[in-house]
Amino acid sequence: MSNRTNKIPVMILTGFLGAGKTTLLNRILRDVRSSNTAVIINEFGETGIDGRFVEETKEEIIEINNGCICCNVRGDLIRILKDMLVRAHKEGTEIKRVIIETTGLANPAPVIQTFLMDDVMRYWFEMDSVCTVVDALHTDRQLHAHAVAREQIAFADKVIINKKDLVTNEELELLTARIQRMNPEAELFFAQNSQVPIFKLLDVFSFSLDQKLRVRPNMLDHHHHHHDDIQAIVLKDQRQIDPKRLDRWFSYLVQVKGENLFRYKGILHVKGHNRRVLFQGVHMLFASSADRDWRQGEDKQNELVFIGRELEEEELRTGFAYCLGDIDDFLTKGA
Image 1: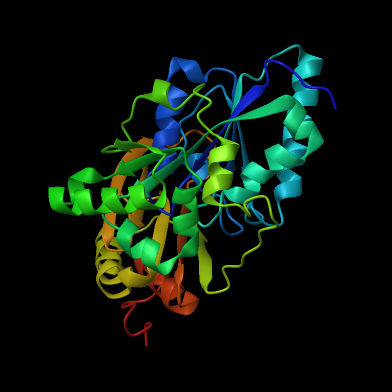
Image 2 (image 1 turned 120 degrees about the vertical axis):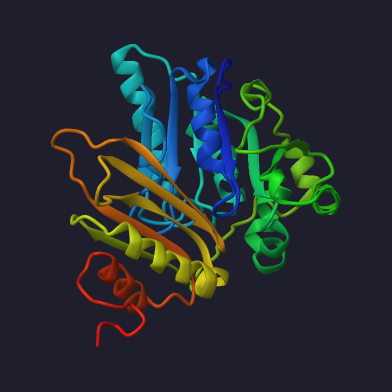
């Protein structure tokens, strides 16, 4: 197939669960350079919630949440991008760039592979950058426990060491040295709340296949992996949740179960609040904040997603029932 000039740049935004990818995506979408950007968000598990954490924007945001983008939904990714091209042509509009935010459990290599080996993708699109966000506080543990966390760093040309305020200077230096040993050619950024210069991430065309092949000669080989030991549990209910009970339950979860909770986040319908409440956490770190007002006609629903290892669904549902007032104590299961 003939070459095409002025290809559409593709940025792959990756990083382990809870590193700060969606926060960075929001910063990009607030930037004027993000106009005419198509955003594709892939999540682990059947229910997608990240799309509701992304700021409201004129840009097109599509969620893929029926699988991991690097496994069974790569066909979905290609189909979505082809549909975008066809629709843009019919409407006489222009796609200036594509940003793909992968699930925190995805190896980015097969996504990169999609744009290098599919003829249509290669004709229309060009890899701009692979940007990996890492959590300064938890990355050392994640690199030890999860091969995918190491791959996310290895394939990046931009690495953002986020949440630098949560570690000491010495810890930051040790982590930096480890990342540089893994990927000496990546450009490093140090950030709080994913605050980095957007102009250094977009339209930079810093991804080099040749360099990546030197690091990983088998990069274009078939990749497949499973997360059989990792679960995603979703809890939903439209009734108002009791804030005092919620605090008690979450204090218990963070202290007792935090090690196995890789990521938890959601939207809450809290008694006494006119606004949605967003919460998110990684291991023992947890935060919540008031979001926008509930809209007229909008379903006021609690929706919680927990991703982790060895999670007990019945125990989580019992705690949720306690917060809703169905039982008197989640520790005794209301007996």
